[in-house]
Image (tube, rainbow, N blue to C red):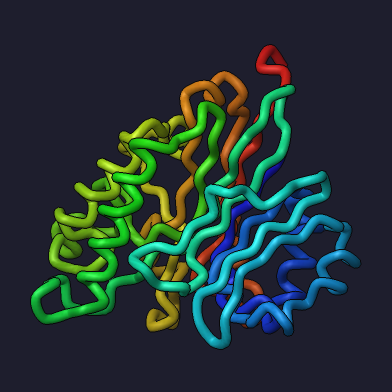
Length: 268
């Protein structure tokens, strides 16, 4: 089972890139964030034509939006929620069968939080912190035995998830309050699959700012995108992949796709 997560930053704009990615990575399931398309305009026929007949989406005009597309049967889970009393299309949960067991896949787009890391003066940052707190409390009570959580969580929690730990400690996405809250969410019962494969002392990024003209040379990245699994799935973990080359494609997203591969037979 090959599952990709990608903040595509406008699905309709980057449909050609999605097609290229499918040819490159051959995923079974794709979770997209920031689709930026209201449901009536979702390009379902185009997605099905790419070989993904199972399509579930939640979208809105210009902002946010998540979808899950699959080669194999999936259904929307009752665990799909609105967070912080806002219908802003940041979460989609689907169910499918893996290794003979029902499995829940959560696709998240966590609020970015604005520029100022002070909840007293920045309502966007306050929203982000409240979102993290609410998600953590919910997963403490509702985490399924076989669960996968992917998405743009907009936080780089570890020292080597950013290009400069010291310089980014006061920058939104790497502040101590954010990294602590994300760790608390992870510890509700998940394992960081990316760091099972790439050790924590290894630099690992999934996002490079549009503001940096020569992003590859400077390599000022952050790991804002994540792949989490519950312990029951860890024996099935084969590999993860960060498709850094996608950042160099024409009209790219500032995020790159990340892939997790799980083998139904853990002995292989």
